[in-house]
Length: 79
Image 1 (cartoon, rainbow, N blue to C red):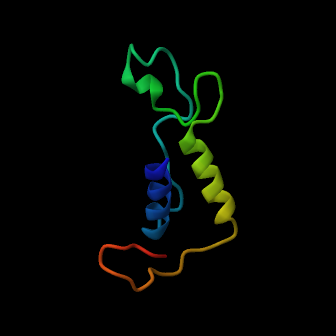
Image 2 (image 1 turned 135 degrees about the vertical axis):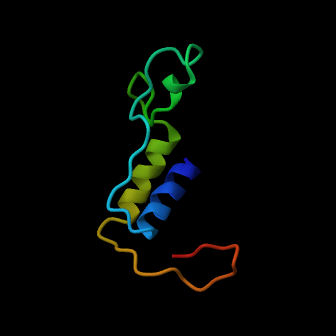
């Protein structure tokens, strides 16, 4: 979930108009292929933590626009 929200924010900072993720929903048996567990939603349709985090981020940033990075310590990213 942390990586998905960081990915979305950094894409916006880089000027991306949209972002994509590998899969929307899990499919098949994860023990058969790892890719079967890469979705934002489980095979039964229930959301994983990353889907919930992205939804919350989207709601919090609705109608907001990135303008600039804030001055901060070199190891801290603030927008």
